[in-house]
Amino acid sequence: MPFPTKPPRGGAAASTAIHDNIDGEISAITEKATPVAADLGLLEDSAAANAKKRFQLGNLPFEVPTGTVFPGSPVNGQQFYRTDLDPSPVLFTYDDARAKWLGEIETDGAGRNGSQVTATYLRRFNGMLASATLGCFIPYTITIVGLSMAWNTSATGDLELRRNGVVVATMSWTPAALTASDLTLNAEFASDGIMAFYTNNLSVSITSPQAMVWYRRHAT
Image (cartoon, rainbow, N blue to C red):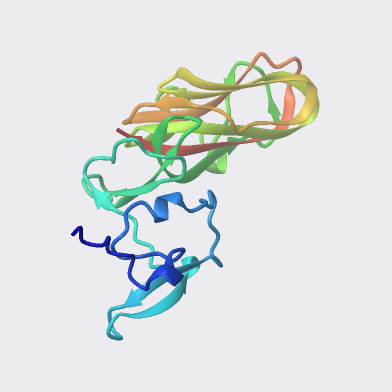
């Protein structure tokens, strides 16, 4: 005589429950693609004899992984601490649009108190001159993600970010304006270089320009 099939634990009344001896039940449940902090889950409390309890996703402990090699197949916004880079550890976030692991945002700036003619460098703090050999020294590789500038005297032109005198990123604007910005840049600036700002192709001299760059450390 054949043996009867073992029913799910809990009997027929529990046929729609989640069981500990039935495969494929959780994968069959409708997925919520974008969970939020107030969403609930079920757990067994190891500190209370594995009693069933609920928890909110927003209360889960969050720990950024660390290591010397970035994880493969990253997703946008994924974070990772590199422990082999100085000053260690360095936090990186994966930027899907630029397909890069990038560090936290950093900024720098330059300007001029007075008239700025075309094809000249902007100055730094306290009127310090800038050139291919004078500027801000960048000790690690970075990605330029944005440039902006504000000035008096309506004009068209270009703002260039240069490394050792060589253009690595350009923001161009037209028609004539008093401000310009581009936060979609993706330009590499190699380590151990001098950073300086340069105005070019100005339609007229501009007055009191103040420029900024946004950049993030890049590692592979």
